[in-house]
Image (cartoon, rainbow, N blue to C red; front, side, top):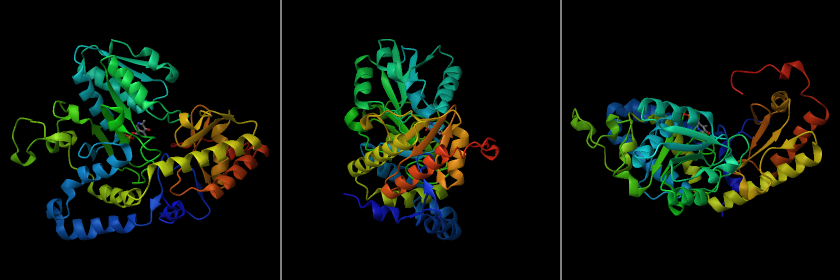
Length: 397
Ligand SMILES: *Cc1c(COP(=O)(O)O)cnc(C)c1O
């Protein structure tokens, strides 16, 4: 079991703030500043270039990959860190397409995060081999899995509604049809247990700045199933994915195992922040996390529905069908969320009308949820949002 009062004490949470946005950018662990400072002064400062060997910088992407691997049910040695999630989507999809060379259809859903769709479109354009991206309703994905399908590319938890896809069932169905799968775990990794190996998932990607708390700009991760890794051809064939980067050969040969999914120099300072964040995760039991997350989301939904009839639940009511976030629809959702933020309740707004709240048991407890319900109900029943100061949209919503 995990003691969530103890994990809460490991985070710096701004005074008086209720932070229901850890699904978008996790807060600062208290050890991060010192860990990053050590990477700057002791490692970069004192070791300079010898840090690649003497501070272990070169090994960090796979070592930390294994620590994340435990959270997502990956086999050891099959997860590596680097780049941003958009890049990792491109890389995984390109490798997946190559595994099914005689088919042209890539299937995704309209709830997917736009960057995943944009990356797929860009990849299809640059391949120029006539691939087609089919974007269907999230509820209809299973119906569109047929013998034309090359790749099923899905984000498991919908960033707006929190709707959770059944990874085991959809992966099995895709495999029966002869397709391969790319799972984006952006809103799953650190939100609940994932069993990539048990589901026989082919590829998975995710980021570390959301639920994993590694900070803005932290690197993404990619997983490739053991049965594919020695045959998949990296489309982004950078030198650090080469079999022998320091041979400086003029021809590319993919590296051994998951190393081939590396591209270039890893973000070492950001890796130090990830290292500190993963120290917390190393002690977390994922089943206990899920149970706590379900309790918090159930409490929030019950409280908001009782107090705010003008808000419509946009998330699945069944906790088994949702991730670790809860969203409500409201026509003036942007202004309403700004009014909540003015009272130090931080959630976010997703166009066109979604007020989104993330629940992260590592640092959010039942008392926070009670206070959040009180603030939302004050904002809604007293129409505090109906004020010009809350209606001008900022660059980042
Ligand atoms: C957050 C998120 C991204 C962001 O990609 P970056 O390249 O890290 O900016 C991409 N896809 C999904 C599904 C996300 O939730």
